[in-house]
Length: 52
Image (cartoon, rainbow, N blue to C red; front, side, top):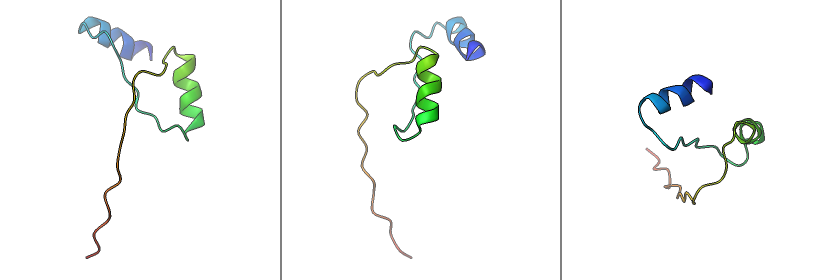
């Protein structure tokens, strides 16, 4: 995380996003402990799988 945050700062990036599924509790804990928090809403829709 330190290296990623340093690289972001060097490139004048002000927001770092981490796309995590809420069911991945370990990742949610990890990123939360690193200072990440909720920001906005991401909506998705699963496309039906076409059988071939």
